[in-house]
Amino acid sequence: MSPTLIITLVLGYILLLFVVSLITGKDSSNEAFFIGKKESPWYVVAFGMIGASLSGVTFISVPGVIGNFDSINGHFSYMQVALGYIVGYFIIATVLMPLYYRLNLTSIYSYLYERFGWWSYKTGAGFFILSRTIGASFRLFLVALVLQEFVFNAWNVPFFINVLFTLALIWVYTLRGGIKTIVWTDTLQTTFMLLAVCAAVYWMASDLGLGIGGLVQTISDSEYSKMFFWTASEDRYFFKQFISGAFIAIAMTGLDQDMMQKNNSCKNISEGQKNMFTFSIVLFFINLLFVSLGALMYIYASSKGIELPTRTDHVFPTLALSHFSPIIGILFLIGLIAAAYSSADSALTALTTSFCVDFLGFEEKTEKGIQTAQQGGLQKTRYIVHIGFTFLVFLVIMIFHYILETDVVTALFKVALYTYGPLLGLYAFGLFIKRDINDGPWVLLIAIGAPLLGYVINYLTNNSLGFLILPINGLLTFIGLMLISKSQK
Image (cartoon, rainbow, N blue to C red; front, side, top):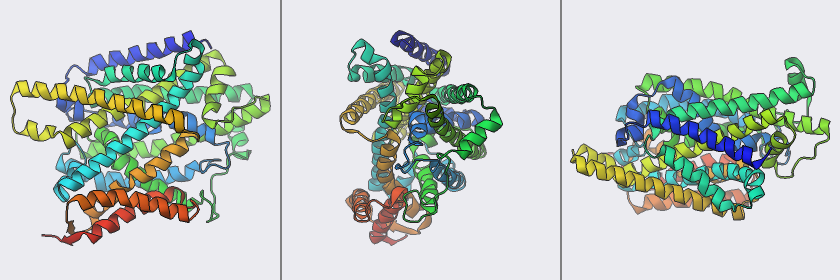
């Protein structure tokens, strides 16, 4: 497939997103940007959140890593984590979402201010900004690598130009509409992503002469389909993965402004919960589809004598663009672009929202009834913040480009397990312990110290904790807060 055709597809897809942005972004007010004026249909949010949750990491990295039996996500072991997700999403819907709707929060970290005070509030929001900036950069970095390999290298275009080009396009179409636009573009992006995966599975099955029954049987009989691991000393031990999956869902969705901002744009708590319950069940089967795709890719390559790249993140792109039919290659590219933009655009919107509300006090200024001219000033400030985070993501991606050697899905989880731990501890203490804390610099020190101590514990246990390091970091934060707590007034 020629680089010219590939870049034409990219620009055509972006044009489609611009059209959606123009239709949905007519109201560029801060209220529309932050929470979509609470007019988002729950079923649209639920479907769109699938794409936002999966991103380019699941689209490329999860299927590719299936064949790496040494990885914690090798075989079908990832489905043990996906089972835990269902438990986590249930807790989000029944514990966290009622809280967010009752307090009518724009930023979910405002809860920490009401519960504890200024230091806890800024610490929580700061850790989200750190976590989401790194996470969004990981996701976009993966897609930039593929575009560089198959498009920009042929034109001798440097990697940093590739990244700037992609980020500039995302920045423009999210600038005005915010969450009101994101809810609808996520739906479009989820559709193209799933269409690409289903088309790839259908094409490989047809080429191998497999019907639906034969396809299922072939995958289940393969060496890749082992799903449950019962050896306690393994990183992939079932209960480690299952429990970790529940905490990953709670932390990376329920305590994440990016994901909950979409939920909070629904009309009321009832519709928000419908969204979460529906999303959690559908996502499990979508994850099963992705790991099945991974197994089928390795089976197909083996049967056709295709030599696959050593880097697992390149397995799906190599097959789709070099060995599948041109139509499948085109659908793959559109799905890849959709996966990348689905996570990056919502991340930029959420980061802008959190910084404007949590650090610049936009809600306080609005509640004081400031003049229209000053409202316009806030909107200009929001534009500047949006530009700032776009540039920050660019810098982080460039750092990854020079230092990252492992597959992206493993690297993403490693970082998230440490950065989301303090948020987990803060919210657990606030929700379940009827004590106050001495809010002050100690909160920030505990939030920084807990992941560092967790890293030392993991190192001393020969990195055997796996994904359990997330709840352990949350527990360490929880214990630290207990030490500085006092009787509730």
